[in-house]
Length: 463
Image (cartoon, rainbow, N blue to C red):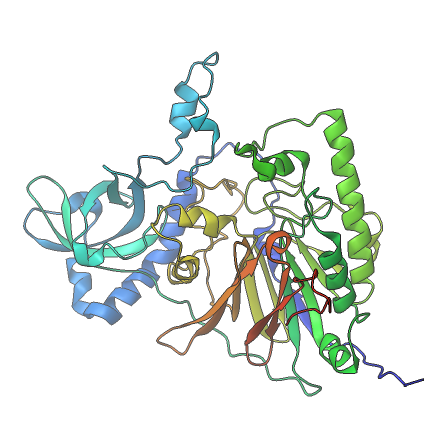
């Protein structure tokens, strides 16, 4: 009998920085305007610095507030973008609707894109709001509500600022990458959309994923690779509630976070969570696991989503290797800064722009220096009356920046003028793509592990 090679999983240092996304108060006594003011206060100096680098220090001499712009005078305005869009949901419309009025079928279907004919663009600061008109040369720039930008232009006689150019904060400063490991290349595994318990989820790819991560699958060479996978991050939608399941099965209705579950649905959800607990127990017994909540998980709806409660996972939560964390999530592994979300911010930003270049939109959020610029306008979030600043502001650029539950796997690098280099990753929905992503902590290179094609004769896992 051939002797098997024993491989010990590589050790790493780990620091969880998700306390910035913690919620200590769930009251809603404050207006969301305070969040916008905090965001503008934090990002205004960064926009001005970016503007000086682009146009020279003299640009600051033309800086005015939105309401102080004079006609036919070139000005520089720093403020928050607001986009008035035809198909964007409006809370005012819902409040003004008669309580007995029935929703139309079209109102119950989630809108894929917000933009349409007659949309208007504004910039607003502490003083007020100013309408903008972009030239054709700038229309390809990705702009979304909530992004803080700098605008140069001239006010026309109609009160609209004719934009000449614009700038964004750009990439935030970045710490040096951690030193390479001495025992071989180390990896962090990213996966999302497991949807354990979903009626259409195939259990064989899920089982193969668990066995691969825990070293029960493959040859001796595979075991050496598996031993260097130092951490697994589950980026949301690890399980799914009955409402989400019926939506994804083809009903087309938008998710209602306030919908109450019937007793039968509560029982089904309990079974889903119990199965998730068993999966996490098996994997966490072999390696550290970070579990982030997602849009379809039984957690709070508003961002930042708070961790799963330990009572929901009675077995796996007893293991010190399971880290129940927030969404968005921020940590540091051997000096490599990791930042990402379960995908809701990217999905919502994508509704503001034409096309489907999600990697470009993901990179743009780094240039905005903001994780979720469209919150709270079209993306639910807490008002943060207990925090002096906006926790979604990206104060330092991460080395790995990811978005979970995406339609496909993509990866790229975003580089900044000061030597910043960020690996951006779209983590695919595992239920659809059966794909897990390995990211090297030494080189930031990444590769997908695809557990598909299982109907083939050899039943081999594709890498």
